[in-house]
Every structure is written in structure tokens, then in C-alpha cells.
Image (cartoon, rainbow over all chains, first blue to last red):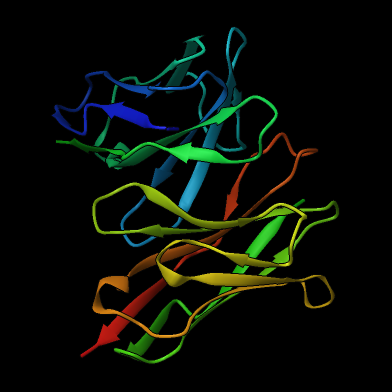
Length: 115
Length: 114
């Protein structure tokens, strides 16, 4: 149990386009989902926390208009990178948490390359 | 605020040798502590977690970690390294009062020599 999927697993796009990444909890209801980005050979940096049905809470320095997060249901959260630029190229990882429990379950990640 | 410090960005051991990856945390509230492993181009896999129960925590693949409050440490060990253990390891901390936001350490890359 506790499987989290991400789609797509990798995406290449042109500069200026928008890219949507989906994060799904497949076998449990996730009251909270988290979005991280990871640059090569670096650690995961938390971008934002999203709770179902409410606005996401962004970490300091993360542009909320650039990285749109929607958590429309207990099993789905989406991250949209708007007007992507090469510096947005990164590995984006989501995680999901069941209500009342401390463990997060991580998705396999989405590699974004902006040309 | 919470933080995690992993001592040593790279650790190299011989196959069959003891693995010791160091992690120190800072937290003003009782922490939850985690160790994750990441293989190249993959997501994170939970190795083990400390949630205020037993201080010695056993995880998957023969790994274990001991929570030492007096030392604010949560070091990861494995008695005998396998080649398949070569990966990136992340120590992480969260808390209920912090909304379960997970803060990761910088990571330690483990190399296993034949």
C-alpha cells in the first residue's frame, strides 16, 4: 500500500510554455501533499505544501504565480510550471501524507528539461 | 525551526564493511526522524523512521538507526555493506507542530568498493 504516482515521468518543453505535473495517491486519501524540487547532486528543497480544498502554502523564495499548485481532491495534486525557462529544469518530486500520520510517501519524480 | 546536518557528502566503504552515515538534527519540539535512500534518477524510498517509540529503529535492507536525544543524532548503520547499497542517502526531520513538513539534509553518497 501507500503508492504515489507522478505523471509524466519526464518532459521536455520549449522555453515559455507551461507544463503540468500530476501527483496521485493510488491507494489512500492524502490530506496533505508536498512538492519538492531537486537539482543535480543536491538535496530536496520543499517548494510548497498543499491541503485538499485549500490554497497551497509556499516556502520562502518560491514564486506562487510561477508554480501553480492545485489540490482538487484527496488523491490528486497538480503542479503547473508556467512560462517555463531553462533554469526551471529540475527533478520535481511530490509526496503525500495520510491524515494523522507522520510518514510521507514519495512519488518517483518528474524530470523537467526546458530548452 | 528544524534542520538536519549530514556529516560527509561522500562515504566510501568496502563490500562487507560497516556502513555508518551520520546525521544530527535540530528541533525545538519532539521530532520525527527519517532516513531515505535514492537511487539514480529515481524517487525516494523510506529506509526507516523514528516516531518517539523505540530509540533503536530497524529498517529495510538490514539498516538501522539509533535516536540519541542527548547527542541530537540519528546515525544510520548497516553491519555489512553490499554493492547494491551504493546510493544517495538522506536524513530528514519533521514534526506535528511543523505541519509534518519534511526538512532534508544535504545527502550522503555511499560508494561501495568491491
